[in-house]
Image (cartoon, rainbow, N blue to C red; front, side, top):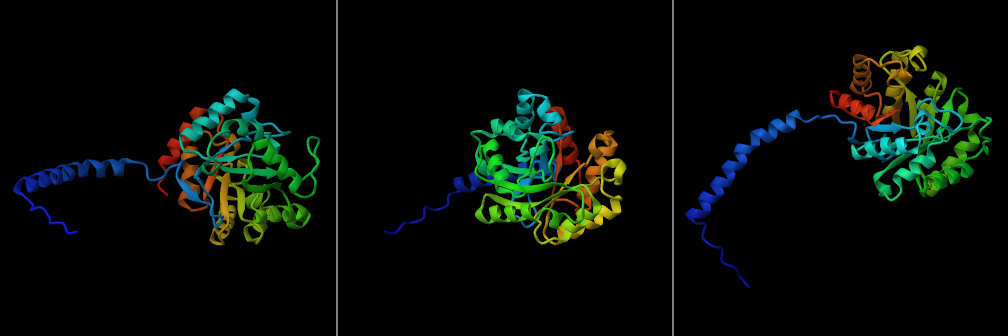
Length: 304
């Protein structure tokens, strides 16, 4: 069957011209709006190193002043925790930073129940040393099975060995590393790594083939006074090395564990870590919805 094209009439031409004029007239306003819109957002989805995991550039930390399976966020109670995390999710923060130490798994479970699992990025951490509140198995399966039950999920995106304070951590925690590698191979976890609280441990992590993800302490001040492992120059150089090798770097202590509270200090720290390409994402232990909004607003002002 053949079709004959209808002749293009003068009325058609006028109609098309009017539509085109309207589009062109509206274009400058649209361009201006696009220019005014933030080009850098905490809610932007970024790929974390070579893991293939896409997470919001800002993670909601759940472990401010965390110890003995509790934290400032969990001690505030379930209602406050729910309000905090749900607000972040509504604002596009899909990355949740947890740990056994913080006791935040059951709190997160209640918040994410019923949400599409593929829209969330979950990071947790195994505490490797015996304490009054935990006796590690020496491996990882027992801990991760418990984590999954506490969270109500089948898979955890990233699992780290928590708080490395010695450059010999690969040998010290070989059993946990082997266990996590096996779980990664089975798809129970997607990526593995360490959180570092020592410069020697950080340097080893930046070069170790086993490590997919590093949780690193970084801000524009640097030094122990501001909860960093070494000077800002030394830490920055190591993080650049890690990122060049494809490791995901998630920055923590961006605001110096609560010591960098002035607006200009927060802005300077955010600008430093992102303008220098030191991290893929950051985690901030925001305590209320106002702090979430404030952090997102400050990140939107970053020109990396």
